[in-house]
Image 1: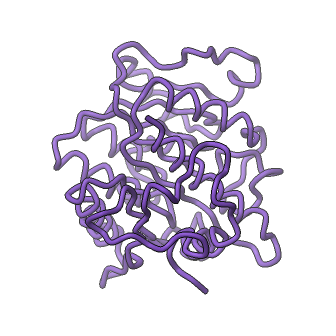
Image 2 (image 1 turned 90 degrees about the vertical axis):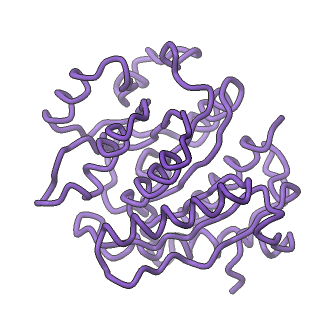
Length: 286
């Protein structure tokens, strides 16, 4: 199986000439996600071989894609994974490329955030997710997937959460304590038609990082995830929102995380791969 994204159609680009660096990060340490999340990146790469060259949102392949080797830190600890992802994202930024991180569990997002923080980037994070992930600690760890967006916010990045619908009281309280830097359109708000076309908070940064946990989709669209929650988004809900993001903001990086492949459910892997390609196309738009 070809392991480079879209390699069945486009010759992989050298690292220094690429517009995108795809970074497979098969992290799967959390018991909540189970062992399946570590297989997510390879499933996305495999499914990408079946994608058409143009998905209607732009010719991602024409932008030159380089796929890095999978992240594989020595110690199987969250801190090691986060540091390794940070190094890979920093490499992409040094090459002038847009980093595209494929998880693995959501914790990999923190590695990307730290790389942008170290580079002095003033960006906002747009999070598609069933979960708020704003806990201070979870199961004794501050680096649990349930804590990732809190750690990202603590780096100074404002956050916009979309489709969240599994939220602890602690997370609601944290949101309420930071109304100027955390905004949210929970799934019930979206379902009630209360998400306006102009959904960005005032003064939200012009450059953004999109972090997309596939459990942001409704389980009928995306069953292959460790913690599916009813009431999520459907495909064209997501596409309309991402089109709007690309129209008014510059996407400087993104990740697709949380895919836990299930044998025989090929459509879920394909959905995650097509989402990745679509985000590339939207990112490459002038």
